[in-house]
Each structure stands twice: as structure tokens, then as C-alpha cells.
Length: 140
Image (cartoon, rainbow, N blue to C red; front, side, top):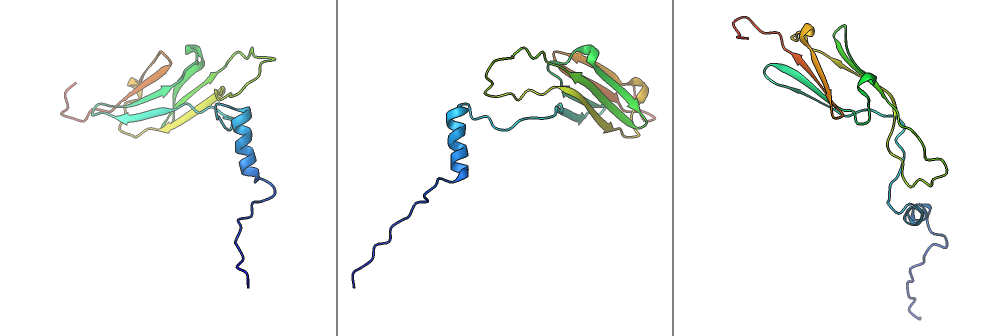
């Protein structure tokens, strides 16, 4: 009996995933994928011995479009980022910058002095300092 050789058979049609990747390479040379639909600014929240500090990256947001409020036991950060879209007729390869309204709500601990909260907005970064209530015997 002759020995049969086992040949690797390739699919007649390239898989959809490979086609998609090939399309990405040809038509979108930078390899960006997907779209960001909503904008949620990134924040850092950390604690020092004297206060809780919130820092939020808000590039492209105007000072008048940012609001910091206390509602009940929550610190509320809200605002809006708008871009002028003067790109009609241009071919986009990637559009990841999102804009629109945003709101972040952070529950504050009971140990903070809500009357002494300070906010500063500089170079696209919002910094909110939420001081802790000083305990008896602590110096100012």
C-alpha cells in the first residue's frame, strides 16, 4: 500500500478576522481601533494627613464650563468640553477625542470640613482640596 502524505489544507476563504486585520493595515495605517462615545475625565483621589485631594484632567475645558459643588455628602464635579469641528470634507483616520457633558460624583467621608473646600483650575487640571476636620488637641 502506498503511503499517503498528509497535506495541510488551507481554507478556501481567509477568515473574517484576518480580513479585518488586513483591512486595518491597508486602510488605517496607524492601527487605531474603535471609537470613544462618551467622555469621562480621569481623576486621581488621594489622602494626606490634612486633606483629601481630587485632581482631574480636563484638557480643552474652559474655566467657566467647570462646576464643583457639595450636595448632601457628595462632592460633584461637572462640566462640558466642546470642540469646534471644522473638518468637513477631510478624511479621518482616527478620531478619539471625545467631548460633551460629564459628571463625577464622589461620596465624602463625614470627617471633612465642607465649608473649607478649595478648588483651583490651572493648565487643564482641576485640583480640589477637601480639608479634614481637626480633632481636639491638633494644632492649626
